[in-house]
Image (tube, rainbow, N blue to C red; front, side, top):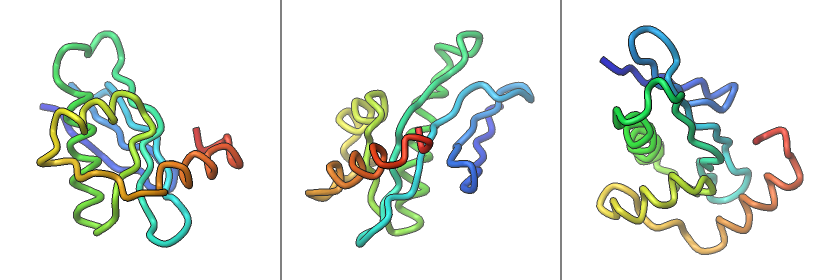
Length: 112
């Protein structure tokens, strides 16, 4: 059974499968008003591919943002495609937040 764990301090949302980390979303919190959670990169280890773990991670990322009352900025191509396919679970990103997130990432490349 897959287990998802948020490590906010490190900006990682990990999924474990069979007791080992099988994948993750790297993310950061956008500074500003409103704040937002910014998905930068989603990866699943090859040995765990095809199990739906990437989708489970993105679904939980959006659910986590909803619980916190903040929008998601899907800079990660996988997260952006997932959001397009699941508009009922992935509200559109408010105008201006994508550019703000890109600027924050450019100014702080260590967030990647």
